[in-house]
Image 1 (cartoon, rainbow, N blue to C red):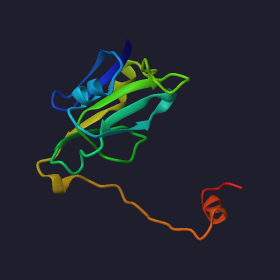
Image 2 (cartoon, rainbow, N blue to C red):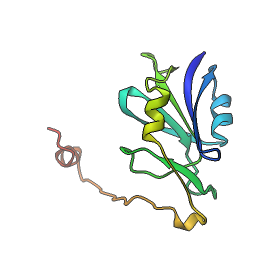
Image 3 (cartoon, helix red, strand yellow):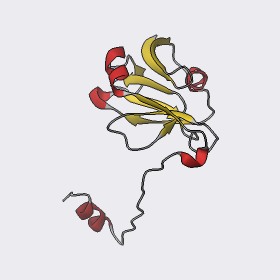
Image 4 (cartoon, rainbow, N blue to C red):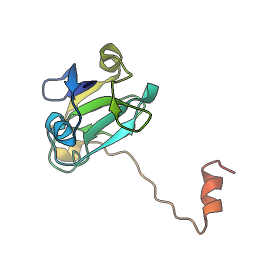
Length: 133
């Protein structure tokens, strides 16, 4: 069993939960069919509803260092050396201090971060743009 942190957008609460392993449990906490994740400080991973911006969800949350608007619940876990879920490296108090909850009356009001699509003729040009060698 692992300790995770649930971000519940309906209740506007951040709580600790105990997880066993399994994808079904993640679906239950997130209340969604399709999820993805993003990295946070201290090696934490936040799972969230991958379709939250297109399925009519009007409640969400933000982290200061993540530009995308997250609609729906979030579940924060850690990662073991072999890539499995582990205890959250972030404490409950740390997550509470980072999360900002919000509601939108209309899905069209949800801010979408600006995106830019860039194509490259070769890999070297891509690495130059990204600051690589």
